[in-house]
Length: 351
Image (cartoon, rainbow, N blue to C red; front, side, top):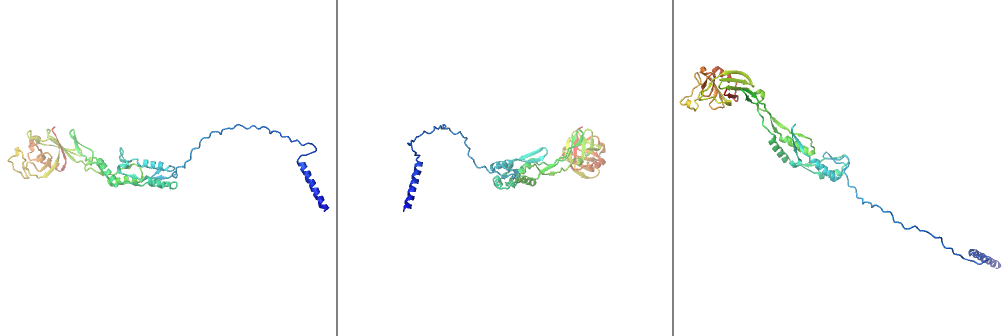
């Protein structure tokens, strides 16, 4: 009992001492002073610096993969719209048709109704791997290409020109022969169609069938030149003089015509039939044989009722004695007959 009381007393004393120490009490009077807080200086408010507005960001327009081509046109790295424009522009270029080294014709694809499917090709290019080669589908009209070439052939086709003998002064000279040509419609239509289908614009050399002339300069053959007033006949072969003869020509009232003619008929041992002229009125036909006015050979020319022939009247040679024909001695006429042909030119001059 006494022990418990002592412990309680000791705890009370400890608590009292602790309280006194915490309150700052001592033996004097307790004075409490309050000091004002130190003054504080706050900076004035500032405005934030101006800022540049950031533009809105849009999604990047897609581009075609690098190295892609459409119908031989490079479109890699281009947008779809730019690629379409480039392909359309490339396809619209004209084809160059080469007629000769000095003449070329330009053919626009639209002139023959060619239409490229650019949208389809660009759509394929959008999903193609780098370096892909995309074909360009082109719609072409075979009928329009053929029609165009047929019209063009009407302008370009030409007939061959034969060489012929013309008189220059008193001598025959050869003119040059010229090849003809005919445009090959089917061959050229195929070339144009392939160029359009493949979108290729290399020059296209037009193909022609060459038409050879029937007569070339080195195969002109004979020509006869007659000097009416001089009473001479000259035979030329390939424009070179071979032989000349004395002849008789027409009387003043029946002159031998002057001009360019050709031999149109040849007869051996001919009949003489009276022409419908006043001087022959009442005459009868004369059969072949001695005394025939035409001798043994007749070479009729393209002047009516006029020809070159032999004559039994050799004494008339060198004179104006006939009714328009050209008379020769019978042996001379037979020699000439062997060396001329139908179509041989005959030039008759008044000299």
